[in-house]
Length: 475
Image (cartoon, rainbow, N blue to C red; front, side, top):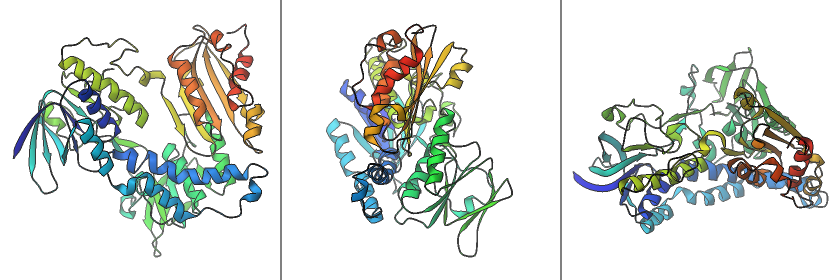
């Protein structure tokens, strides 16, 4: 057994762990990163990148078919093999050599194997061949192991070998039919992707689609999916699962009906990957989410950090990388006796996790949101005005599509005169979101936003229309 010592040990080499280590090393610390699978993590190989690759070809084809002059040039359907080849390219064929090379160039040591805490500031790494390496941290250990798909307790479900997001994004052959349990982001995106790839899709979403968003977002996505032949079943749960004599999955539902499909995808939530990390050796519960302060340090500890999905603050890759930058910088500052800037919006905190989290769901139409929904603002007791505008009435939308369907909503805190939430639903709306994120994070007064003139004719002109809905007297 060998033993090594570093200033920082990071468990998990996804984008979050990579960024924690990189920031600390840039500040002068030494760091090792531990990984049992592929360097680059879930986002690179089984989530963000392959899922968007599966979605993009269908979105591009639909966009062309929605514009007269272009639709006449579209003479065929998607080339499924080409879509999958493009997906494989986006995942580097599940080869992490490029990511490993990046680590080496960044001065971060990679230790392959499964890492477990064995006590304060100590991690034991067990390689595939059984050999063990003990690592000791002089200053900090950061847990960046992410999350895994939650398998609901449905009788028989585990026995039918259900897909999770991993199998859905790494598929090599499109099934004839797919049942999806869950109406969140993964469920809605995969319903969109597989419908465009020719599968007969049924999505089972008890409370409707995209429940954490403004209600109109899920409604518009559900309508679009139904228009494309997807069966959207709401108000029912799966109560039992089995495979029939032909090998198809049969799901029995709480409303007395049944759904039969070649495969079933479970997309009902996430659980932390902390069950086999040795948390019990440092007084924490195995399998639990790790509670952290705004500097991403585990509460009650002065050396253990939890960054990304494992802290359950915002289960999004970009938000995890944001946390990672703060964590890597503050670990270095504390190690070197520097000043810690932990006031709200300081350099060493993840303040945006609370009320300024942006997210895009790449359905058709896309859903882009940041900050509070109207319901959340009401729960907070804020005095707000809800501004709604039909995006189809913006000049830029008619330039983009002959069949544009979309909706915009902004939430204004009238007491402070600032934006606290925004949601956009429409084709290719993702790039509109960052302007709203800047307005919310920067607490830009609504009175000043009147002077941010949107270009014409673009969909961004919706900002002017929303302000007109508010009125200058209310700003």
